[in-house]
Length: 290
Ligand code: FE
Ligand code: FE
Ligand code: ZN
Image (tube, rainbow, N blue to C red):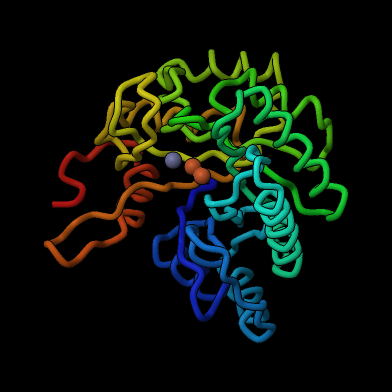
């Protein structure tokens, strides 16, 4: 079982991220190189990076199970203001280069939102942007994430993702499947093999390089995108557990992005240690956070 969660990337960068993941008994992790809602980034610190390599090694965490996530303010679909589109492209190129420096070979990117244009136009802009980024970078794989279809989000169904992936046709362009997003997009996670069959037929299952395991606060097809703790949402524990142990996705990192637990009005704590333990046991505990 390759399982981890979203972790922070603070002063100590990947070294700190790894310490956090280890505290959750995880063997995979996902980080943003800075705040996801902005694009302020610090250079990679060599000393902390060396410490990160040693720590990963001594804890049997393989770098192929470390995933980066691009900030979600990046929008490759919207080209109305060309300087903003260019900024998004250049920022992602820098992110890929940071990944390269960190020895991380996967970055998850939200395809983008088609604000004021059609979804087709949005998708064409995304394809153009990704082609530029792939041409100007090397080695790091871009994983476009399956989206809930909130507002004007592109990548809301398998056909749209297929259009992007198959048009670009690069070994380095892959997919990250998010269980909350596909539920909200209208795909029933209780019949996940049916989803995988359609995915395989239209894109190819080998393109899936990361899975985000999240429950959802909203009903199937709600197009909302609000994550819930494992087993406490509308998807439920059994369906999510079956994704986790699905033989067709055996060696792919599974990442939790579930919400922090409120202890009191001022304090929240990460749910990941408890959720990982529960998933390893394979039995839902309704009193997990009590
Ligand atoms: Fe995401
Ligand atoms: Fe996600
Ligand atoms: Zn989400």
